[in-house]
Amino acid sequence: MDLPDKLAKSQDLATKVATLFQKRAQVAQDAFAAELRRAWSAPAVAALLADPGSGARLGSDWYGYAVDAAQRSILFWDTMRERGNAFVEHNREGL
Image (cartoon, rainbow, N blue to C red; front, side, top):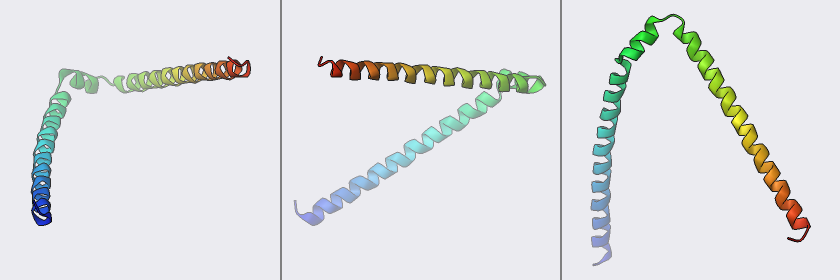
C-alpha cells in the first residue's frame, strides 16, 4: 500500500471515528437532559421548593460537609507528615 492510499484510509478512519463520537455524544447529552428533567420533576424537589426553611438547611448541610472535608484533609496530611518524618528518621539511622 502506497502513501496516498494510507493517507486516504487514515482520513476515512478519522471521519468514521468523528461521526461515531458525535452520535455517542448526542445520545449521552439526550440521556443527561432526560435525567435532569426527571430529577427536577421529582417530588423531593417540589417539597424542597415548598419549604421556606429548606434553603437554610441546605446551606448548613453544605457548611457541615465542607468542615468535615477540611478536617479529614488536615488529618490526612498530618498522617503523611508523620510517615515522612518516620521515613527520614529510619534513613538517618541507616535502616
